[in-house]
Length: 168
Ligand code: CA2
Image (cartoon, rainbow, N blue to C red; front, side):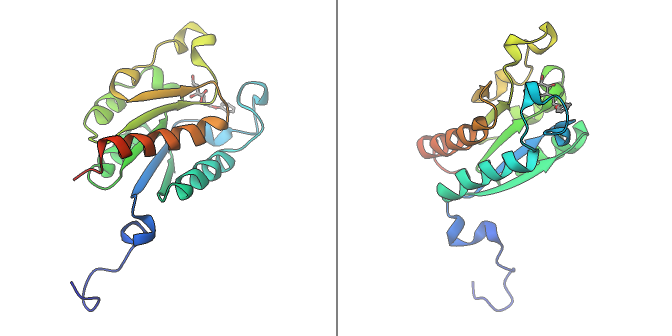
């Protein structure tokens, strides 16, 4: 294909992003990070965590795409939209982690690696947080490491793509 008349070259098809795109999804209320409950979630904002993840992705030759939504359906649609387009998905679904069968089904249909992420350690908190309905359909979970988890989750996706190969 020549440049003339072809599709605009986007960042995700640029050779600089040869590794592809990693999608980082954040669920309900995570936009409040840094402003409330710092004793549980720390003082960093979601933008701070996204930057940590972006730097880790960049180091690995990947581009990070982010979406925060308080709406379950929007997160489901984002996972659908990642099929065939993103190398992997990282999701901190917030409280939806404990209840959303829609996110469970969307993640189950995503062909690449996926990681469930939590700032806190839900297993050490109230009983309703002990169960994740997403856990059975993701490759693994990172929880309890605060902001460090964002770097670890990106590195896990990159390692998994490396062993499993890029999606078709
Ligand atoms: O530890 C995590 O990352 C959680 O996913 C955070 C969710 C919680 O429901 C999960 O059980 C564990 C809560 C996200 C809302 O964060 C807030 C931040 C500041 C103030 C209020 C809520």
